[in-house]
Length: 462
Image (cartoon, rainbow, N blue to C red):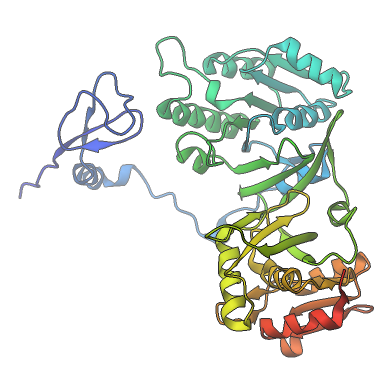
């Protein structure tokens, strides 16, 4: 019996867009100078695979027969950098670092590779700066010597050739958007070129056991510029965040095949480059004002460690037809939800008032454990009641006004006690409430119970 043949379709070689008809341009990326190319349909490919018997003998392995490989890591010279990497650079891994222009990506990488160059061979492929510019920054950072090689080149073929000649342990490409593939290849930064160059670098990392660190630009939305497949190909994706008007820089990991995700490294920008912040909680609590209404210390879990930060709220009568809601460090939608919960469940009049929220230090609180602290901060600012500086607050607030438990309650309390806090307002976990010597816990089930503690744990009028 004759099998049905598959239908012909046409595909863009740059972005993979498919059409049932041939077109002289790609409507998706406009990057097909010779038009769409004909390809076989998935049905015909499947039939050819079945006819070929699967392409060879079966090579699948039982999990019990798979050996355990030892992961070889190299330290970056920064404990905070190593933290987000899961313990350091893994040999043969592919790491992507993104961030806003001027946030300090190249500075951080240059400081790290300068440390690694003392004992290891490092190749730095610079596509955006000249060797003289890099040397000026290198000297300004106070670095000397090392087995660090600078390659002012964007042609990927030449970069790979230099890797084969030098056999470095680490290759840095700054940046992936400047990489090209000869005079006849696609334009730098195009979708097809980014995908192809990333595939070449990934193969280089795995076959040559060279650790590849690539710096990438970000879009105005704050994500890595280029196709999403770029983040799927690499082993680790890091983001360096921070306001250029503020010295704090946050290094986050959003993907890591060799360690935990959502880890956070904290740095401070100085004239000598980036300096790691060893005691993050003390750093963010430094200089806080006592007896300030609307000021609450919350505990946020960043990766595997708790972080104590100050959350400030200002509630004032509005002069606008529609009250303003301004949030820095807290999601605006989360602020609107909590304001509605407090007005509906606790009777607080917030609909006719402006609300301004700020997380001190430039930190962004993404987890919902800061809900209870924000609720108490809003109530304290509205009633002009200051909370004692010895109180820490955390917990998730639901739409019904209930306070829900959060993860790592004990580690948050231990961190709070280590920094001198003596009271903690936490979700009521019943018999599971941890006991920390020297720390008095105040478990609550409803947000109204937490607001009633403002008078007991507050310092009165500021």
